[in-house]
Length: 320
Image (tube, rainbow, N blue to C red; front, side, top):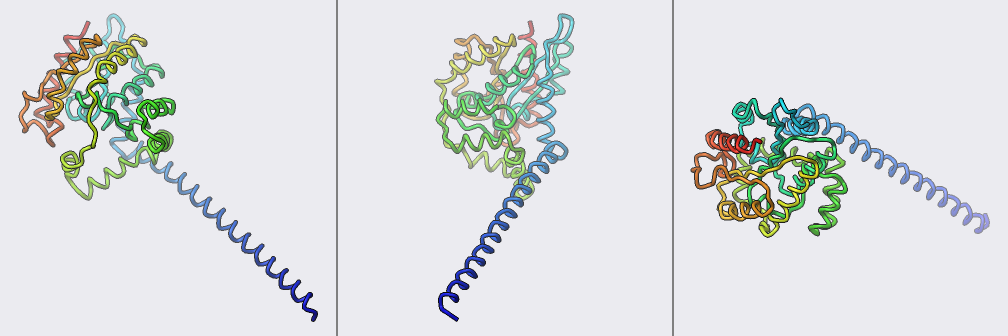
């Protein structure tokens, strides 16, 4: 056989085999992409179902948020609608049923609490609620002095429930938070799995390491300091936002057993007087002993009873 014929056949065989390899690689790539897509869709569907049907935390937020959107002003002969917003200090600090009993029949109290949220989360969150038609007679923001003054990236829950894509972009630009924060927050806003992954992790940690939250609060401290110079501008913009939608607003500082909050409370009160917004410190840290806290920060039932009564008195005095 001539060598040229042999070479031609060899080259044809190699080309045929190379074509098969390309086909196999493309097939594997298609299967890989299809598997990844199916996995992502399954996670989204599964986490959405788990959040709505199983997770107490997810069901609570979904229910509270839906209720907050429906709020409208009370009529002249009806109780006024009051929306309390805040983080775990609100959730642990106020006995909502007890508060409702104390202020009835003059007020209907509603709550929206999302853990680890700060001032900026709630500024944009309230703006979003108002845009969706929520119109309570009054909004009460319950945050500590440090939580009012911090500049930190939004948590996944804040990005999912309180911030829209435009709010996330604004916040990242305003605070120079970087592309990682931008991508994480946008994913948390649009993806159920990404937005609720911290809740999944918390459930696993609570099961494996009981009491880890107390340890985390004691030893895993965020390496940031509040910027109290921001307080006057923040309180002015909060008052302007609520006034634009004809909603009165006020702030309440909860007891936290933290020295930084004790020292900063006068700054908040001074900034509030300058901004013309009612701010109360109904129970200073100095009034509560350590046995009123469940973990050195959040109130236990004894502390909760004291703070609830003080908040009820504040709301009653603010009632027009």
